[in-house]
Image (spheres, rainbow, N blue to C red):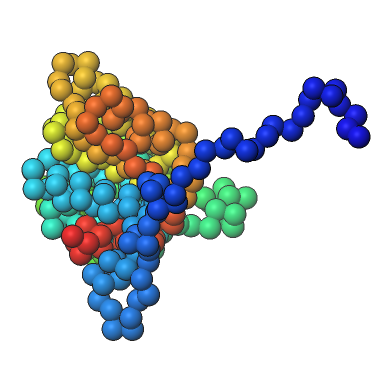
Length: 319
């Protein structure tokens, strides 16, 4: 006998309403399933074999929006963090740029450091644990000299740091300029904007560092990025790839500046690619900018060295 009050009885199930399973609208059907890949499959075959579910569906939709932006001649802006360079993805982005799928690049300070070093010597990403104790971390002479000289020159001429550093780097005729985003963007006259937080990059503690020049050129680039964002209205795309804090904050300020000045900014697409979906990218890139409008934000989680080539393949071969 139950210890509970005699009026407390298990809820009866006899009156439950049911329906035929086949009559229900479901989110997944066998039409969406993956297909095995044949040994002689092409890349297009492989992309078509993926399940049309969740992240794959989002990737396909995003690639379609990027193709649409190119057709509409709307900006396709790539906001990238340093890890994108360190995982060897510059050649993929450069190829997309040449095909018309990159019309602007926004990078944080680590992008400048790693891209510059790749261009000059073909390697980057020092062993911090091995050098920090001796105070040698970040002491590469060429990195600090070139970056700070470009900032000083850019400040004198009133141009942004991305443009100034791309020009300065090309003047060096570096052996790996074909693998450098800075060099490729400058050569193609594709806007490259640099967004610094003074003190976060190794060049900022070199003797040649000039905080006023770094700040002035970075602020010029902020305004230049805001103009690119303004032009996104009616079909543009903004991708945040591997920046958890700086670029999401900069992008959100560009959005509010554009709207504060009375410009319409709607019907555009945003996406965040990273290992983890963190607060600022999800809020400042994926959700807030497109809320209440015709646009949409996407969040795709995974390793950059896998996801960005997959995105490129979907753009080029996935129609």
